[in-house]
Structures are given as structure tokens and as C-alpha cells.
Image (cartoon, rainbow, N blue to C red):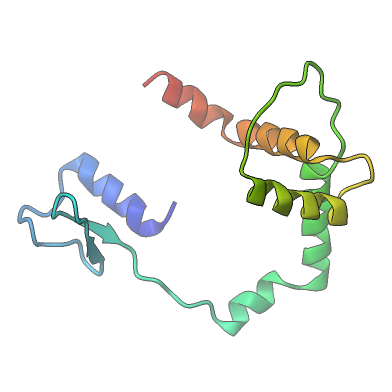
Length: 134
């Protein structure tokens, strides 16, 4: 979560939001919403500097990241009681290219989607349980 969004949420819970309609939080820009005419705070965009991209892209880090990605998404799962889901042809074709180039020989688009959904549900398990109770 961005610092600006976190600050906005914290201030809204504490009742510290600006009183006037046109007054915005410090150092935030706003974009109009056409349907309501209200403004939504948007954090300023900071450009990626050369040092940022250099830090993230060392060969050792890329290899570790690729190994983790392969282990999470590109292993062939055993799917029991298969069910049909639908995605657009364009997206399916993109995933097919990815699976064929990076995955092992037995991996299919269905296997990739199975791994993707499992990882997503695992990563957000706590949040999803909280949201179900809302």
C-alpha cells in the first residue's frame, strides 16, 4: 500500500480529513471523477532512477527470482476433478507462449492457472477471511 493511501486511510479514520471540498491533503495532486465531480487524491509519480533499476536487476537476483517464479507457477500440478473456466483468447495465447517457453514439458495453460490461483488464495488468505466477515 502506498504511503499516501495509508496516510489518507489513517486520517479518514481519525476524522482529520480536510473540511473544505476543494482543500486537498498536503503534497497530493487530485484527478476529477467525471460522474460525481468529486476529486480523488492521487500520489505523485516518482520516476525510476538508474540506481533503482540497477539494484533490482543483478544477475544473481534475477536467477533467484526466476527460480522462485518457476517453483510457484511453472510446476505441473495434479488437477483432480477438472472444471471449465473461461479467459479471453488473447490472454490464453499469451499464457500459452509463457508456459511453452518457461515451463516444463508437461505444464499446460490450465496447470499455470491452477498454480496462479492457488498462490493468490494463499497470499491473501488472511485478508480474504476478514473480508468475508464484513
